[in-house]
Image 1: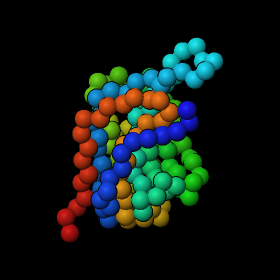
Image 2: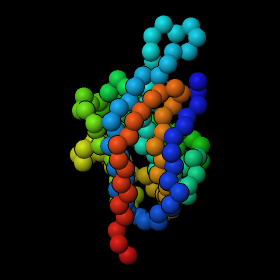
Image 3: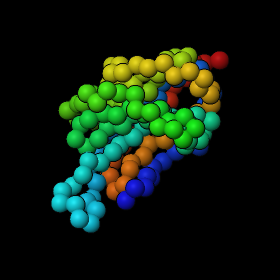
Image 4: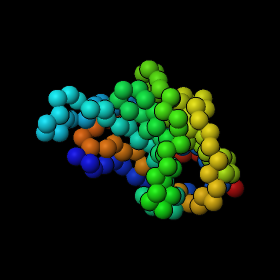
Amino acid sequence: GGSGSGVRSRMMWSADSFLVEATLARVGPRMPNPGEDSFPVGYAILAVLFDGRADNRIEWILRSDGIFEAWDITNGKFERLDNNNLATRVKNPRLGIMRVGDEISFLLNGQVGLKRPIRSLPRNFRVMLYGFGSSENDWEAISVRVPKR
């Protein structure tokens, strides 16, 4: 309860522009905690960790009820970027986070669902796929694209 676990890339990339995409096979509800009557929503999270740090990251979350959440975490301070009205019923969605300079776009199957400016982001980043609590999620693929130098 209250914990997260997943996989993080060993490689660190450096770019002012990138596209990270991950295809999700399944995100399930989490196991109920003692006293809960139903299975609460589960979370499948695509995260970009700037300078490889968990306290400086951007997250694109698909919940098991089909609702999306977009978050900016800067120096450990959380800011929700979406307006609570993004959702999908797509099976096997491909989640994406794209950066072009200071513009961050959150994508579903290559289509922009949300775009926000976030200033002063570091160039270096790692990628992480994870879940929260006892969520079970299955990922099929991930790709990271940066411009050639």
